[in-house]
Image 1 (cartoon, protein in one colour):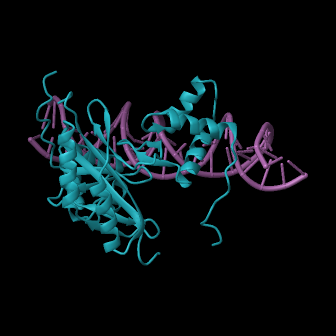
Image 2: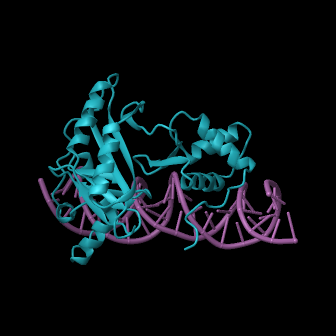
Image 3: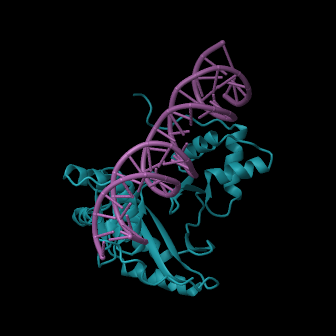
Length: 133
Length: 133
DNA sequence: GTAAGTGCAAACGGTTTGCAGCCTC
DNA sequence: GAGGCTGCAAACCGTTTGCACTTAC
């Protein structure tokens, strides 16, 4: 098997650019379907399959992060410089972005301590917001 | 809405006891299907639907935690007294349990700061362990 | 006896894939 | 011109649900 190093360069087609742009504009995480809908509404229809393929490619290339919602849906966000987490209201769904330098540091320390490298983490807080309490 | 307090007592049927027992014996997380297979192998067949319904009930009752694997499968573990998180090797799947008092505290603080109450959190660390590096 | 619990199989919903045609290099 | 890329629709797969039957109380 020849490759395994840098994969194919990934052609800059209209669809790929559109998906990439949509990801850039979205504030937080978006699901594949949301991206598809947003683009369709904007007059740049892209097949759902293509959205999934593009997202998979971007994730592979390390340009986007992928997470799972509580009910198993995949959601994506462009890998932004600032890494943050979400505090979500389980009643109304409102979400607040929070940063946790302390957590980041702790994660790194724990990983090292156990001999792990190249560690990433996922953290999610779920509760009831003031309005819904 | 009347309820929200103690729900129905949950009848101790053969199936429920079996699922509960299987969860107790499993070291880490198990998927619904794994539980079903394990029970079937042991000669205690339980319908898949029943396994799902039982797990949902146990989760609702706070007796088990539910998480999602990277590919969207739901996995469950009995809620042990000590709340801990997992550091998983993305190559061999080995998992180490870690505790993070700092994280727990941080989560509580952030939640309060934003007016959220009754907050729970999920945290997962994924990396490459020493053996696989 | 009654309502909760169970099994089966069909329905679901998000994701993946096969294939014929289109488009970038 | 060749091979990657796209769209469509069918296939997948874990999970949920409708319904008739069984069982705990």
